[in-house]
Length: 68
Image (cartoon, rainbow, N blue to C red):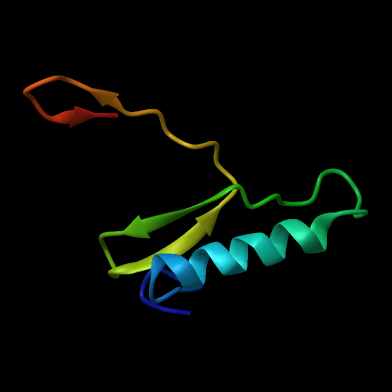
């Protein structure tokens, strides 16, 4: 664990491998258990984590900034 209290992954590839493993492991398990859906970068601890939240949609403004 780290300062966030969440399991850290040092890079995106490592987090995505863990996500694939979690998805493979949950096949055949009961409903109601946590289902990791995506990896994200945490600015607080500079590591990647997994979450069960749906992916956030980003709006791309031409010639401007990205908005969530």
